[in-house]
Image 1 (cartoon, rainbow, N blue to C red):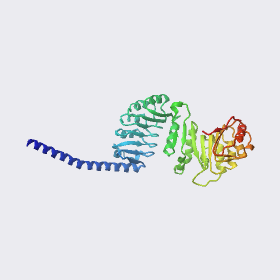
Image 2 (tube, one colour):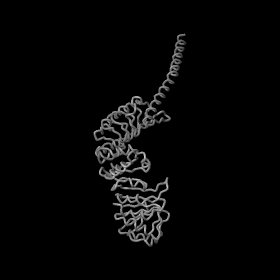
Image 3 (cartoon, helix red, strand yellow):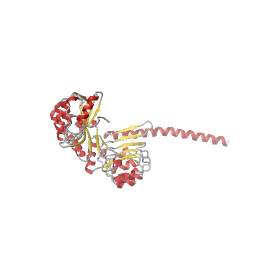
Image 4 (cartoon, one colour):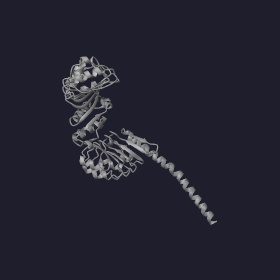
Length: 399
């Protein structure tokens, strides 16, 4: 009898526990859903977004947001927060503590924010963190011990910071590291402003292998210039780019109409001028005249329509032009004469071009490397002629 009573008691307890779970779990779900709804509302109100994955983990994007308008206490701590992107926002040391209470946080992208060495020290207790991007932040070698203390960290990105080459080598012993030394605080602030204006710039990350003295390389995306009408002072954009060109190599894609916005005597390592694909275009001599005011090391011309001779006549006036690339044009003897007259030209790339009446081409003023690519390549006889004209032993295929 006692055994039956004990068994009945155990059964009742199990039923009571199950009933408690049935009552409790829906309440937990409701509470969690309500919390997530509040988080979405807060984040959406400042232009951010929240993504929920199938496993319930969350990703929050606050890129270029004004975080002073965010009610941090209503958003954090946020259960199941796996990643957060703060790129170009005004995230600072004051807000780091809200991330420190996120045990599931694996991915933090806070490049070009205001976090300093002090803020980095508060990240050292994140036990799940595997990826951290602090590019463009005002950090120094003082934060290296705190970074090394994040034992779960695997990948670290420190492009354009004040962390020294010696410090970077120390970090590279423990992490997969991408690093470059920012030339100055002025350049860091310039890059910061470009990022906040949503100008996508890719920064070369081979500095650790090439050494801190290697000039930085800044690649600007073509899509960035579609935002020009939305930028409050677009003329400042080109001033920023010119400043970058003074310390490194800028790779810049433009349409002809945007040439007038470039500041005279701007220094650009690689300028790619392309014919607009969305609107019909016509040659504008005034636009092209601005090329003569620039310092360009490498120029690429990508046009579907034939460029008039007036456009080619400007090219010899460009300062420091060493590499010229021309796409899909018919090169006449007159055009050839203009192209090879560039005083510092070392290499001429012709892609998909048709060379007309090669036997009438004139010799180049100095030895010139000629690279050809396309379906309409010259005959063996014409190639021999081109070697004589350029005073080179062979013609090269484009890499």
